[in-house]
Image 1 (cartoon, rainbow, N blue to C red):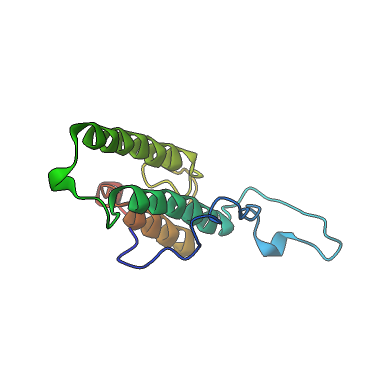
Image 2: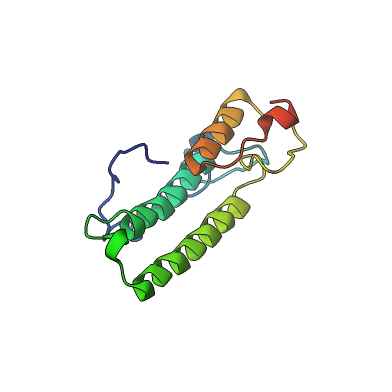
Length: 139
């Protein structure tokens, strides 16, 4: 959900900019050695948001073009749009399945989560406009 805001990266650059490594800054030592523990990373939220915004930007370009006139659209063009809807639905499902377990609101995470991670889960859920399941899980 972009809430009417424009996409922040130009279309031709959105896939050429590499995403950061999924590692919080405090795990990088002065010698550039990386130490990792198994705790949830706050950087995962940023990466997941970027991936979601790529999909949402593609959806905006495909379905909300000022040049599209749905009332007079040819049947073949309309069927292509429906096919695109199915493709985007799959991309969104794949994105959700690729989330780390601690950010995926549809997965029961065994470990207790910090307030920051719970907030990040909530924000991703709202951005994705998925059915809220927190009431059922006691969050």
